[in-house]
Length: 157
Image (cartoon, rainbow, N blue to C red; front, side, top):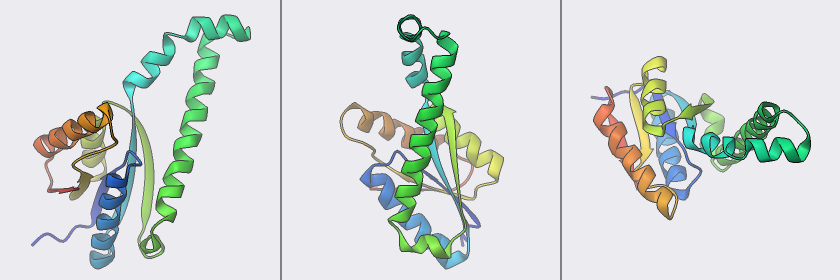
C-alpha cells in the first residue's frame, strides 16, 4: 500500500493544477507527508525574450544582459506571488509542510529532476493545463512525466 512521505505537485496556476494541489494536500494531511509545489518556467520563454534583448538595450541604454536579468528577476517575483496566492486558497495548507520551488527548463524534464533530487514518492499532476495551445503542451507534460517517473503518478482532471 502506498503511504507517501514526499508529494510533488507541478503547477501552471490553472484550475486543473488547483485540483491536483487540493488532492495532494488531502493525501499529505492523511499520511503526514510533505508537499513540494513546483512551477517550471519553460526555457523557451527566455529564449523568446533574448530575441528582443538588443532592441531593449538600445531603447533603455543598458547592456542587454542586464535588462534580461531584470526581466527574469521580475518574472520570478511574480511567480513567487502566484505560488503564495495559490496556496492561500486552501485551508489544508496550515496542516501540511509545504516547500515551493521554481525551476527553468523543459517542464517534464524539470519535474522528473525535481522528483529524483528530492526523493519524491508520489507525483500529483493535472492531466490538462491552461486553455489554448498550452493545454496541449501541459497534456504532453503529464504524459511524459507518467512515462519517465520512477514513482507513482496520480493524474487529476
